[in-house]
Length: 91
Image (cartoon, rainbow, N blue to C red; front, side):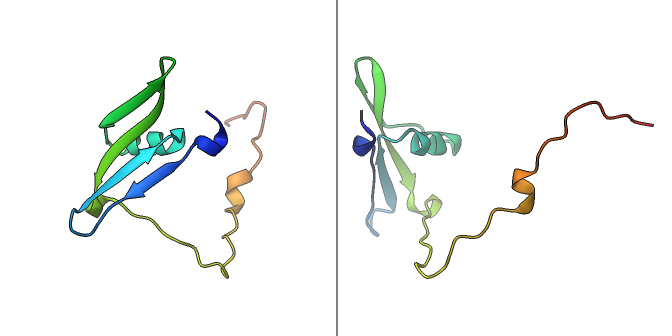
């Protein structure tokens, strides 16, 4: 499957209160399964899982948009700290 074919479709309506998530993207699958959701339907090609479908309660689903005129926040200064190598003496 090419990168162009890896998509995620999110669908819901206000009355149903259920979000339907269809994905071919493994990070979305991992995120759903880490949150405790099991796929309702799994498609396979050549013996390999390629698509997953989940149902999530609307109250448990969230998304957000960053305004176009607001730049991304810089990474915390501690995020890219180099590791110290060697022995540390405890005296």
